[in-house]
Length: 244
Image (cartoon, rainbow, N blue to C red; front, top):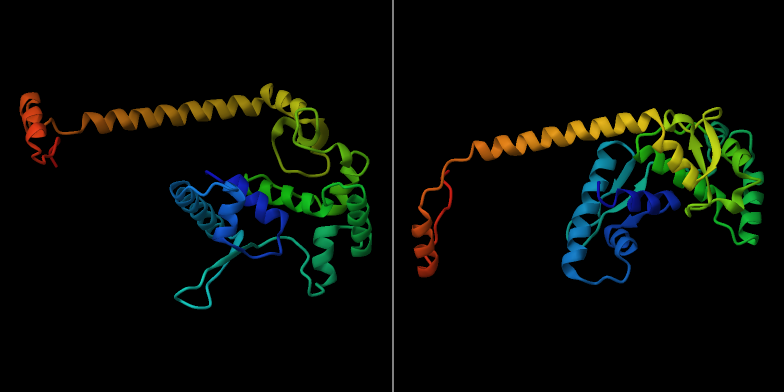
């Protein structure tokens, strides 16, 4: 779905913040002020948000005023709320790590000018949910995997990432390994999953082509001859090219 990745990136990076539609569109398009582009982006984002809301991963906060107001959106995230959650809630996210230890990790990353580890964790968790991939790691497990290599994590071909064995199953202890972006792509290229993905894509494309061919075959013949159509075009007379 168009712009799904961008919406998940933004909301996942700031899971406790409410976003207006305008803010999401601005994040996607940047300085692009073209009205048609912005309207197309707004419609695409609306479809993404509706799908997320229907799937239970998004909270839509209706406008206070029916006229002149605006709705806001936030993730039904796993983020730790500001209002002192219970111990079980904290443990479900942090695992064996204390909130104080999390604060020290984030402060150290900030001092090294590295991305916030907790935001990176939440972003990956949210994007995994958006892709239909399970994510069973607590922050403690995720950080144990990354802490010695976090400064090498990134999106470039030679940057490090978290891969899944066979590119299947959830992100979970025992099913993840450290690799480069390039290496992860190479592993996927030689995997059984890619063969299954290609087979599925081929089947869907064939079904779409067959449906298109059937739709064309079922169309009624033209109502007018070529000469009649030319004459009507010259005279500016409106007409229907095909019957109903």
